[in-house]
Length: 396
Image (cartoon, rainbow, N blue to C red; front, side, top):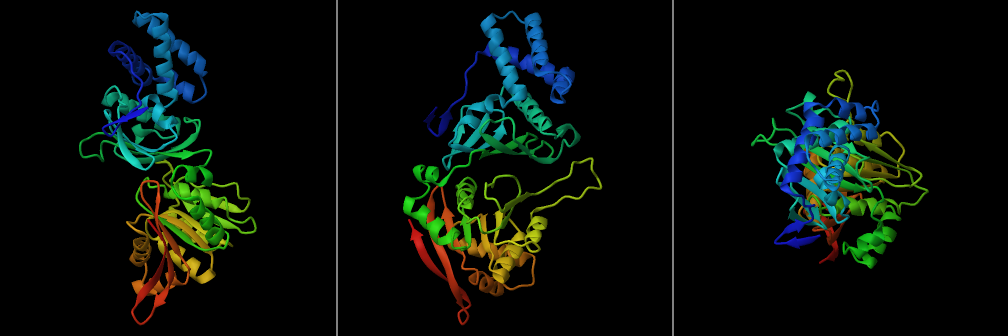
């Protein structure tokens, strides 16, 4: 792997002839005559039997050497049961996000830096077939919702990662294309020592966050843009919560996790399209559960709206330790954003909300490009001047 002019050189290379053979074979088995493939996914046809059918088809329709046949079979297996041309990106530990903007436009977030790649699908049809197969393997039939936005989680395709995948279908995309975003969540979480080695923070900062904040029950709000490393840091900190505390962590998908014996993790639930009478549970619903259960720690994977109100009021009224991430451009702006989200759905004034936040002893961490840039503590509320008081803990 190498980087040239902002382009990550990582793709496998194949001849035009072998691309043509693969394209025709893939379309035949997953679109033109998809019965065997679907039977395999549903457990009615063993995988090796399906691959035997593929080998017979290749032998009958193409004049290939044994080596070329093996190459095509390997590509077919990875395309229909694996991650196709994305495998090198999935396997790279430094890549956290993959954005598919078109068949020939695949970009990544690598160690906090956005890069293009030389990864290409064989065309828009190849891309659409791959996305459809990936969704179908995970219980989502995009043919039933061709104009929809789909979000699903793949726990099997990548050996070392859980994949959170969101897809915007052509009916939603201005150019009529298909968009997809893949967030990689390591099955073996990135521990604090790895984050230190990766340059996210210094050892003394990590020790302070653990000893002076997490173990002492102080609340933390981690801010930054997408791919800045917020979730990685929060995930590493969760393992340092003392075992004599209980907690509830709510999130959109399973990005946060821990072996802590008394932390509970909930994610949103969207019922299938055909389950018309089944109720879903969004992040706000899950946050409300935190108000009725006994918790010493309450966490939100990412605050995006009304859940901010319940997070603030619960922490202020009960003294519960509050841990979350949020989008903001700096550490003080994170507090403003938190209060603004709560204001949208309540009759509280911003001053009321700021005063409540001041009572939570909140500390905000701002991250950029996989690196801690600022740490700022909320120290109180100036009633006469109607403003929050801050103390800079660290600023780069």
